[in-house]
Length: 182
Image (cartoon, rainbow, N blue to C red; front, side):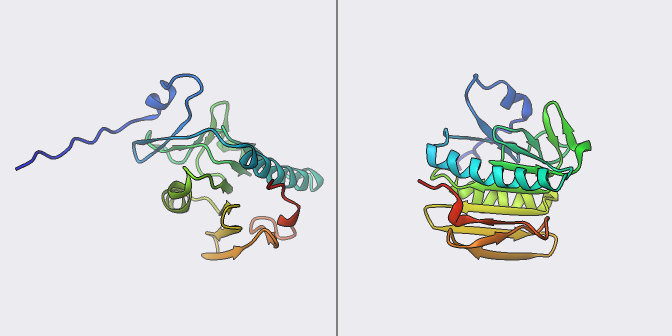
């Protein structure tokens, strides 16, 4: 009989021990290394985050917008650490110099070829159970934006030809025809 493979579990200390410049996330004690984002990915992240931040500023809102790499510790245990592309945090008590302790209100992940399974499956599950209110998956290769509103248990699909409404801000929407994807 063959011996069972020993699974090694990692903690946030292992993430902090990575060499400078090496990015990784930690989900259920497993390290998931991250490839550097390409220019198109960065253009999309910047365009979306700028629209959100401009809206919050115009409304004199309390929420803050953070771009990766920004540390999010999803729960109090030491084995779930992510760096969402965009995090919107409205509860300032969650913010420390190290990042966000607890679930952001709104997370947006822009899909890269290497992040597809993480964004569509693992992170979807983790974000939902940790208390994220809204999660968007933005996939330019599929011309798809999936909006999960966990508070209302809804999911809607959009394209880059649509205006996509936010669930946490009733009057706010992003016109994806104006998002830079080239």
